[in-house]
Image (tube, rainbow, N blue to C red):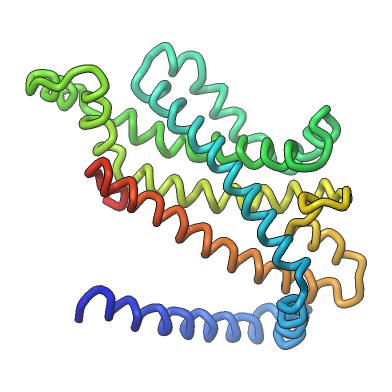
Length: 264
């Protein structure tokens, strides 16, 4: 069976298996913990499908997550190379980033909201990109630091110079760490954007006032709040799948251009 045929078979089976596990866990574990009935969550989700505000919220949360990844992951790559391949970079940033990584996200939200950033795009993207930076940096730093200097020396002996050495030496060595960290970055960004939107609800009659986190926040004091919140979380899960596929597509395209596999 070819790979495309295998994919067409595995995806439906994977969805069916996940639904079966979800229903089983919901009925045997979550319902006894007084979670709302799964049918009620499904009803609110179906109702949200017909609302244009839902799609605006999904769109704006996705845009904020993409901005956060673009900023945070780029900085993580630069700092990982600095701390992993440079003693000066390690001295300047390693313990700073390691300490910053441990700051609870909820505390950062409170600090950022009360700063000049206030609420809105700047606060949510700063929050998400900071957490993306500190967590993905550690993964990339660990991989960059394991590059054997003999491999770099061998490239120089072979005639590689300047920009060719990091491109043909460090990039293939990072390999799957780059792709895996990018997927991790997107997951982290999405969760942190939701927390930022949740904490910083605003209304300015523009498209920027929408977000899944905003919808969740406004559902807290409503009727059947738990079911409404979980219905919004289903949209969050769907958005997460789409963004993960986008990340994989981007890195597959880059792989064809530079000749380096980021899934190995």
